[in-house]
Image 1 (tube, rainbow, N blue to C red):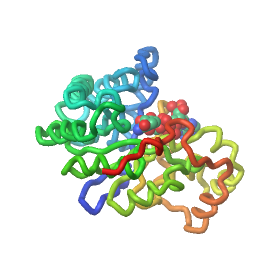
Image 2: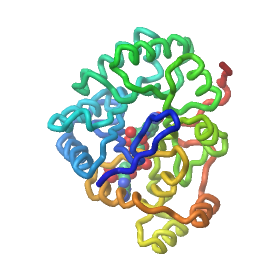
Image 3: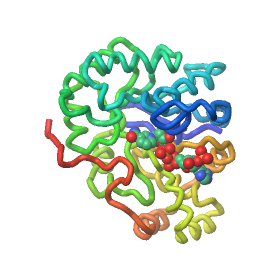
Image 4: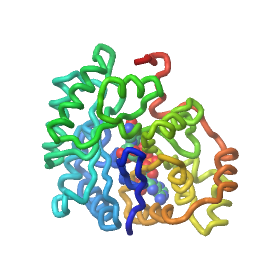
Length: 294
Ligand SMILES: NC(=O)c1ccc[n+]([C@@H]2O[C@H](COP(=O)([O-])OP(=O)(O)OC[C@H]3O[C@@H](n4cnc5c(N)ncnc54)[C@H](OP(=O)(O)O)[C@@H]3O)[C@@H](O)[C@H]2O)c1
């Protein structure tokens, strides 16, 4: 299927649904035991029309990137959109350039469509040096677009102030049960400033499976709870998502989130009444104490 795309006012586009790959190829260390299954899952996703593949140098200590290289070897690179990320402890000027080169080598490609700071640089690294390295990568053409992850409004402003290249996305934990970015004004800021919010962790398995209201809504629309949960995200301005699945049947199910919309009343009912909502991510809580102004 053709995955719908969203386009920012500045002209940058992303498909509303991409494939996440955290835990494909291991967690923080490489695990090759599931390689065949993961390669098949990535290829199945591409066959179903997915073009955006999201990875990071830290996923499986680089092995997720290697899996993407193997899985995509037979496909036209120009039709794929590959995002990778540089870890917070590799964001000094030289370190960042080295990280990008290593990601490109593992991905067996000569450019990244999108390169993200996985978080704000570690203490001791000046964001200006970080962004200078990102700018150089853009100037050299090895990175086509740049963005960030897990940044509060003030950190996003500080990162943007340090580069003349537009930061096109802020990748953040956002789901029916994790509302930190709404409560802290990050979603609204991104919407008002022409930045995509790429929702990671969109499927909180237990929360989705236990929520009666979600099952009722799914029944009303003839959809599954996972499809409703994803639809709830992508109907929002500037929000796209990147669920991870290594199970082809799950991918097929998740794609049923596309091509229809919850009514505004039902969208609001889910927003208001979904049980167990939290205002702080239980996975990557954002660091407000360290907030800085540019
Ligand atoms: N920037 C950041 O700091 C950051 C942080 C975390 C994640 N991310 C990115 O965001 C992506 C998505 O986040 P995530 O992987 O943490 O969480 P997620 O996509 O919300 O959840 C993935 C889990 O949901 C399961 N799943 C998917 N579809 C399903 C379905 N239809 N029915 C039942 N289970 C289903 C998957 O199992 P199966 O594999 O068996 O389907 C997997 O266990 C990551 O893979 C990564 O690329 C970025």
